[in-house]
Image (tube, rainbow, N blue to C red):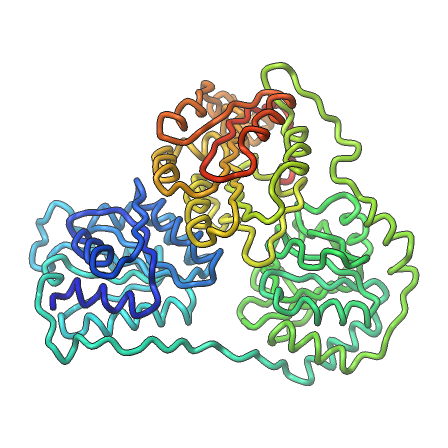
Length: 539
């Protein structure tokens, strides 16, 4: 058995049945072995950066450790932005990267891959000998799952053909070690119970890390007569509760903003509290903030807190409830507020108008709200356009059904993450929102979408510009035409690459396009020409 075959065996032994990547000299025989001998599905991207993004989207929607592979030199170099996104998101991901022979420094594709991998992924594991290859694969998966985060497993091309000693070819069984719930310190629990007892207008704010604790948080909120809210990444967690404020953050709706402005205590559970969640201090300016998280380093890391509790969200909520006698705050949890929340309409009082050649993005979102499938995965890319679906659509985020890869602020993420999400969760259609400038950084992945054939609706909100830059240049007296571009027929491009596509310029056209596209059974593109003068201030 050769090294690349032993690596394939070890990868499959870790439960892998799907690999994303792009073939090259230093990984093509590994991929061929995975496909031909093991039946692994190989999703071939057109760009290494996109391949790693697809793996990241797969991991985020499935909760599994994803695997991608790239070739040596430029193959790894091109994937740098995607690895950095995965590192900041702490996505469990193993990238198997080929490398040039160590003894050939003049190889045309040679560069020092270790410092590059450390600067992007953060973890680099070299396969140094044939005898350690299987063990090194196990180390990579363990690191990716337990850190968690991306790991570059580096395999020189000349080593891959070496024979593996028989004793070193056996793959040990993969035994995952799920962590137990972290029990909070009783003194911290008592202090938090005391804060909730004495507060006048408390709010419990849940993030994605608190999803398993939803019932415990509802019970605690009812006991403390507190209001409930979520970050965007946990949207929908408290749907149906009469005192659910919805999403808190820069994209909070007017009623949520008004109520949160009066809060005097905000307790976050499993939430990545940052400047966006707090809207730069404007969202709950007079509140004492307490953070509950399993990671002590995360508490107060991106936004100051008065106190922290290190503990599992559910364990902490139940422990606090056990110490807290029921509290009544009729002025805070009032019938009038419950009625307002029940009747709230995100499209009420929006000044919407569409000229003949472009649709108002708010009018398009209103149509989306009524037509998009409810049980979907929603992907929102990075850019000014992202403010509209995030603010106006009720996109449920529970069960890993909302993907927003904004960690590094990189454009070009919407389409590849949507492909990965669709491969990972084929039981749900995917609706992805992308901008024209963002899509144009990776048009080739429309071909990948066509080949994968998954039910992905890619909505391209096209203002013929980098909208965020236009809105920042003009107030400083700089010509915003630097960030404007000629309009292009992106629907025609999509069709040329094998994806059915429709162009939308008005509300009647939007409804007709949805009539043609839905129900979603395969890939489709809606190229939506939107008014460039309609600004989303809090994108």
